[in-house]
Every structure is written in C-alpha cells, then in structure tokens.
Image (cartoon, rainbow, N blue to C red; front, side, top):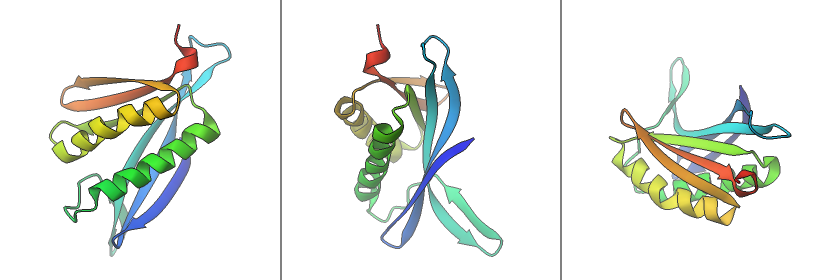
Length: 134
C-alpha cells in the first residue's frame, strides 16, 4: 500500500520517491511499522507515464541522490518507522555505488542502524531504528 509520494525535477527529468507500508515488526511492543522506499525517473508516453529505475546518464546522479536522501530524511523524522528498506540490483553499479555511499550516512544521521544484504543479485539496505535494537 502506497503511503507517501514525493515528486521533484532535476535537469528537466521528473523523479518520484514512493514509500510503501510493508507491515509491522511483530517482535516490538507496541508494533512498529516497516516501510519500503523506491525512487524512479518518470517517463511520458502516448499512453501515460511509467517509472524507470535506470540511471539517466545526464550527470545529475549526485543531485538526484541528495534530493532522494532529503525526502527520506523528512519521512524518517515525520513517520519514525521501525524499519525502512530499499534495494538496487547488483548490475546497476551506479545506483548501488550511490546507495553504498549514502545509506550508511543516512542511517547514522537519523538514529538508525543499517544492514546490507545481497540475494540473487538484489542488494537490500535495511535501516532499523536504534532504540528498537537490544
């Protein structure tokens, strides 16, 4: 279920950051929420718009990532989810490299611990609020 959406424009390209409610952490009392976040570049066609996860090659990756991080930080401050996950595919070297740089800093600055796992070519970053860890 989509919980929150943010759109922004960088260099004439429109991007969308979407937060999906993904359940609760059953081991916490009270139950803490889990969210998944993704971002895409929106493309317009004759039949409507669609999102693509591929990097544009326009040289704006750092600006886009900084904006995405700002949107995520705002969400973390407002919602305070127990966990937040995001992922990239190992073959998306540019996106994975940006995540490897940005996610640890994002976690540290917002009171979260992060864990990085890889399964079948998908790299998943899980941020867990530090006050929930024993």
